[in-house]
Image 1 (tube, rainbow, N blue to C red):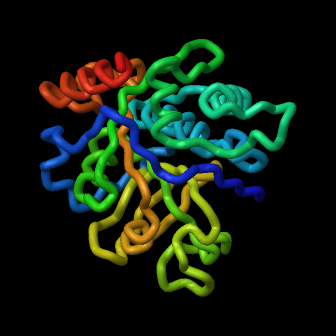
Image 2: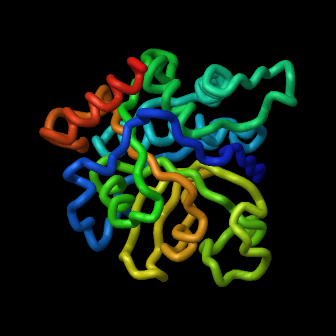
Amino acid sequence: MGRKLGCRPAETRPGQPTMTSLRMMARRAPPRLIRDHIDPAPLMLGNDVLGDCTSAGLGNHIRATAALAGYQVAVRDADAVLFYERSTGYMPADPATDQGGVEVDVLTHAARDGYALAGQTLFPLWGSADPADLNGLRNIMAGLGAAYLGVHLALADQAEGGVWDTATPGDQTPGSWGGHCLLAWAYDGVAEDALVTLLTWGTTQRCTWRWLRSRLMEVHGLAWRQLMPAGGLAPDGEDWDALVGANRDYLAG
């Protein structure tokens, strides 16, 4: 199976939305988030031949959100590649432009111009969180369906199958393989050796919390109001208003 990367080093932009001040982030996160009964149906979305993981991550976040609401949304490879073009400057006629994406810029493009599918265009609200705040990361997973992450993968992570951990053989230097965008979907506990389920490359990949702590470079929460039933998964009350306001002010410049 081909596995491309494509997440460029984390950057920040003046006034970008954050999750940090939301009330949901201060709660004690659930001790486990078991979703074995729900299939988020992740797709490769071109990330086997292109460094479009930032776009594939958004497409699969759409699918994960829909799965939690009991239905599914079709996202085609062509949709993911088109968004990759529009959000990063990739040009199919010039392979040298396949340089990956900066997550905050990709998210900015999605919030401003949308993620276009065959029958609809979806617009996320988003906010960044402190990568060192694992309780906040778990609250994003529990409250928004999945967390949109940027990670520094190590050469040791190239081995296929098994669990990503900091004790497996090979070079464990974060970033020695490169940067990658993936989703954090579920976890069976909060201990260092408890397992987290990630969505990447069209499948699920398990890792330990200690591995994730060592690899994280950025954490973002996304909410797709067009996909969420009334009273369903989303920040509520003041948190929702704050996230709407932060996105509006950021896009207004």
